[in-house]
Structure formats: structure tokens, C-alpha cells
Image (cartoon, chains in turn brown, cyan):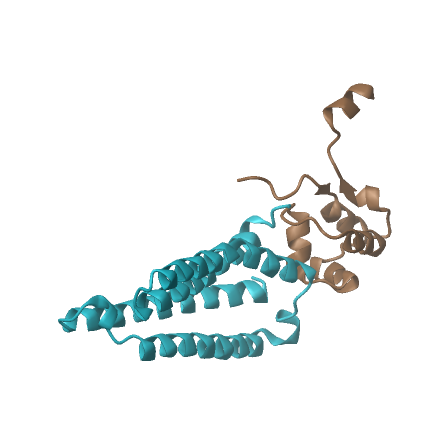
Length: 79
Length: 144
């Protein structure tokens, strides 16, 4: 099956770094359901930009520290 | 399991059961009568199956909401996106059913076949929508 999204994330690690924040706590801060946080962590759902910002803010970090996107081949070659 | 996923399961099972019961009733009536298929009485069974399907969904949703509580039955953007995506996926069957009915009407075939083209289109669309919603919850929401 095609992977729903190429976006990966470090939410799980960042939750633990942020005082072992639970998925439920993060969900409450962001204003989504716990199932949505689980789906995002597992890479099964690509959140909206607004929710992505809210997640980063709730974890006390920046958007690019939370979410990652693979480089295109030509980008990799230029680095 | 998300509240909406449970709701999708209930909808799918209710949809398959009501469609199955309806087909069984109409086929058994057709077998019992000696006339042609299109003279088989179907209107009452079709209305009952639609009505029972709607009532079952309403009661099941209320019961699920009561069991899940306020927090458990909360929904968000992802739920709405999954619902919209599943509706988009299943819409083709409604269109196929309507087009089929249109062709049958143009051919002036009996009402029995026209009504069933629309009904089967709706029913298959509902079943596919349920399957799509469950798949999107389990495997993830595919990007456009």
C-alpha cells in the first residue's frame, strides 16, 4: 500500500523530552483527538499546517524540529 | 478506536445487513410468485429497509455517544477529512446508479428496475463509504 505521507516527525521523542508528555496531554493542548496524535506519530496522517504549528508550540520547539520531509534527489546532490 | 471509526463500523454492518435482508425478502417473494420479476412487490420492503437503516444508525450513534462519553466522542479535522474523502470515493456508485436509472427510464422499462438501479447505487455507495472510512482510519489518509 502507498504510504499516506512522506512527512516524518519526531513527536514521540519530543514528547518525552518535554517532561514525558502523554499523547492525551498533547492532544488536549493542540485541540485534536488522541487518535489524531497517534495517527500523526505513526505517519498515517499529514496534519494541516495550523495543527503542525500548534504541535510544535505545545512541544516548545519549532516546526522544522518536529516535522521532516525527505530531500529530492537534485537537492541531495547539491549538498 | 476513534468514535467516528466505531460509527463507520456500525454504519457498514447496518448497511450490509439491511441490504442483505431486503434482497432476501424480494427474491423470496419473486420465487413465491409465478409472474415476471418486475411484478414482484418491493415498495414496502424497500421503504422498510431504508427506514430501518436510518433508525438503526440514529440509535447506534446515540448509544455509542452515551458509552464513549463527551471526550470519547469528540471529533476533529481528521475525522471530517476522512468522512469527506470516503464520500468522494463512494460517490461514483450514486452516479452509476442514477445514470443506469436514466437509461432504463429512456428504454421505458418497468419501474421495478429503475427503482432498483437507484437503490442499489445508494446501497453500494453507502457500503463502499463505510469500507473507505474504516480503511482510512486503519491504514492512513492518502494524500490527494
